[in-house]
Length: 442
Image (cartoon, rainbow, N blue to C red; front, side, top):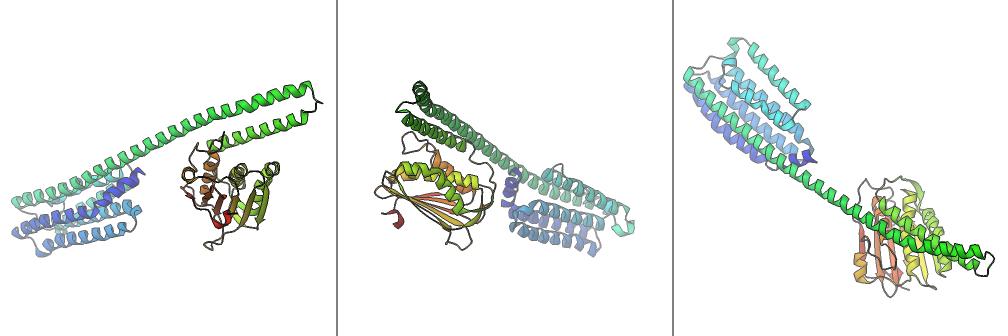
């Protein structure tokens, strides 16, 4: 992230930098050409450095446009632009005197650019090696190829202009890299602070949930302990079956509390997708709550069709169980719950949709807006984590979870899942609506 942020900041001023280099180069090359002409230098040796500089500037603008289309190319672009600059400097040195050229100091000064940008990386070593090789080739050239030696006064003037030009370019580049580095470092520090704060908040939540779980388990454990003592005294007593039923219900309540806590403590564990039939997963979840449906005298309508998707069956069942449990608890005796699972007709790209509609007490509009917030619940003794878990699991699969409710007619939950899980990443996909869909009204 640090390198990407730094590169983005550098790119933000890329055109200004090339324009600055072009302006400095235009002035400097104009002065150098004037000095060479005044010294009586051969015309082609005067024209060649200017033509090479114009070609370099054009190439740099082309590379900049290339990078604009893909910011990930910035490292390669700097490598390429510095290589072109090296070729230009070596060519200019070669036609203006070689080792006796006034442009020679610019080679050493410009070599710091890859060190500043790339650091101790292979790119720096390659660029440094290339400039040494090019310098060596110039040094080995015959004197007749290198051009005449400039008179001392002309040499000093050209060297000052060339060195000043190089210093201006290098200083500007290093300043931009340092500014971008500071910005990137600050961004990383802010992100780290946010992550630490998020981790601390999550730990605090877990601690709070742990305390709540301990409190929630204390009461059913006490009830079970008392009932066990009573049953042990009169195992054949007339109230023993009733007491055993109460014990069973208390154990089931403890299991539900522990399941919510464990699910919240590991909501982002990796998925293990495999081909599954959404109708079978929904049927398995329904079987898990069938006892509560029957004991609550709730009418259950099931309409499922084979729907093949890729999903984690355990996590998906866990999410459906939380939604179904909420529906059962919200529906009074004599009410109805409708569950359907079918291929998703929207989009035409596969996937499936599960709808769970109850005729329960519904959710108030103000409460509906807060649904999915940790610890928010409208149920006495609830933790509010069931919806959070379901929302997270569905989001991990790349799906959406939509609640619609009316206090007069009940609640409808629509879960849409893609044909296969989305790439890693959790998105805020819970949307709410206070208006009941036609199916939710009875």
